[in-house]
Amino acid sequence: MTVKQLALPEFLNACRRLGVPAVGLWREPVRSYGVEAAAGLVRDAGLTVTSLCRGGFVTAIDRADRARALDDNRAAVDEAAALGTDTLVLVCGGLPTGSRDLAGARERIADALGVLAPYAGERGVRLAIEPLHPMFAADRSVVSTLAQALELAERSPATQVGVVVDTYHIWWDDTAPDAVARAGESGRLCAVQLADWVTPLPRGVLNGRGQLGDGSIELRWWRERVDAAGFRGPIEVELFNEELWARDGVEVLTETADRFIRHVLPVPPSAPVSSALASSALASYGAVFSGPEPGSEPDPEPLEK
Image 1: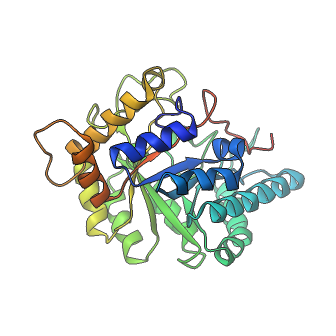
Image 2 (image 1 turned 180 degrees about the vertical axis):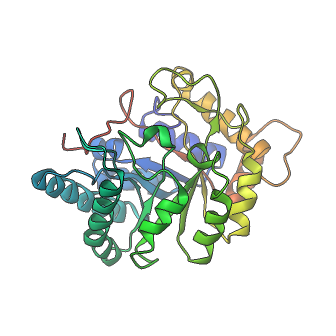
């Protein structure tokens, strides 16, 4: 998503040249190439897939709509397994049209997890609940805090359901650091994603994620929190930003690698990023850049819409 202007082969080759060892993919470009073909592209580039985005949107009240959402999530689990990743990121869904019942929507998420978690576990995939900033509660996710995500996850085994730490969504929450520690202690910290918070937010707010280092979030501090919680996986960068998408994708990818090294890693180097520098620094810390998605904006509905 960070450089969705790049076609999947071009994106993978650029990551390989920069020394980025792994990528987070979205379902739309994977499906456009075919799951097996996309998996082959990743293997041929010498990379691995850290997560697939996204499943979820399971808050519907209508029985037929819920059945379609469950089927879509089972398909997403199968796609994740085929790509060789053990993490399917869930954006759980907002309020159904006409509803104001947040608690009821969260309970429907819990019910869906009860069905989907065993299915995912049998295929070696964990469902990773991503809390979204409260401004998205109505249309995208009624799960707004990491604590809420953990409460839902803890109803299932840790091998089946965990959580995502995304700085863009939780940086404002002073209970989030304790929740990060709790997720680490319980073995539920599945993924870490980075984006900065810049203002003013753009119209529609969705595509307002800032380039690393441009905003208000102390990214290195958050990296230290997940380190302390025992997280040893790759760290993803996921930016929805119209200005970045309008630029040359390889240039944006190179800039993002440089920003990751300068603002996230323990000791920022003084020199600009180079292929050799990125290869050593990024590979050693497992940095990942979330891959492209066709179109201008993720659809808040399941793919079958």
